[in-house]
Amino acid sequence: MIIGLVGTIGAGKQTILDYLQEKYGYNSVSCSDVLRDMLKEQGKELTRDNLRELGNVTRKEGGNGAIAKILLEKLRNNWKANYVVDSIRHPDEVAVLRTSPLFHLVAVDADLRLRFDRVKARKREQDPVTLPAFVERDQREMFGTGNEQRIRETMELADELVLNNGSVEELKQRVDDLNLVSDERLRPSWDDYFMRLARLAAQRSNCMSRKVGSVLTNNNRVIATGYNGTPKGVKNCNEGGCERCNSAVAKGTSLSECLCLHGEENAIIEAGRTRAEGSTIYTSFLPCLWCTKMIIQAGIKEVVFSEIYDLHEASIKLFETAGVLIRRLK
Ligand SMILES: [Zn+2]
Ligand SMILES: [Zn+2]
Image 1 (tube, rainbow, N blue to C red):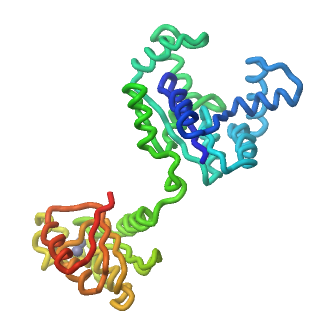
Image 2 (cartoon, rainbow, N blue to C red):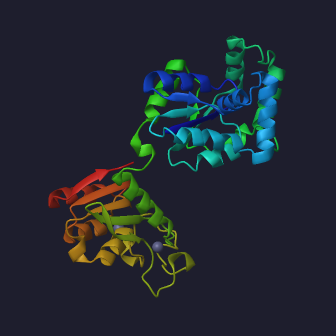
């Protein structure tokens, strides 16, 4: 795993970095390490000016992601180890690191006043000591142009945002909760995978009342997908195809007048009863009573749903009566 850290000044990157090293055995690496190694190879002195100059030249020649590219090459030599890359400052660096399937970007932020107090307390030589100077530096780092730092834009690319407005212990707890070392960060679990597919199917829905997607699986293979909408050959719901969905009726009422097929229904029709038998249905909403009946009759053995709406008790009761397993995945 390669975790990239990006954050505003004083947000708590260093604390996260230390914690990842101490608790989870991560190796800390950075783009400045790359520059330091390069300077050594060139037999030059390790000074701030030399580092800055080499950085500028490398970026000028190879683009803003050039140093990150060299870093990533180095990490590839031992890709099984866990690395934390501190600190990423430009969107182009993220683009380079994203070429690795092991990369994950975590952004850290906190309220400005709090960050200023932290920076003041750590008493580093180059840190601003007055609030106006701090704000000036903060803005400069966040909204640079060209090959300057662009922290804000980089943070927007993050997979996770950690807000660090509390204590160090709370921050550590948040890092633990993120479960950064989990393999599921690199690829979703089966449950997560199928539910995401169901949600993706829901996006195809043209129904005016609600978007629902379903996926039928057996032995972790997709058998069929479905989403709700009017039957084929009939005008789409969002083009006025279903009068009920296009009128102001309360959710869950006048269902008998609805022309839209439900996501679960469409998935079952697509699979056919023979293939639906013994399968699991992943569905973005808890099935309505109508679909519950269909699911039971199709011989589906398990229902995994995500969202719930008002009319759920009858469905849950019926599933239980019929011996269909049901569980919620948020
Ligand atoms: Zn509809
Ligand atoms: Zn339904």
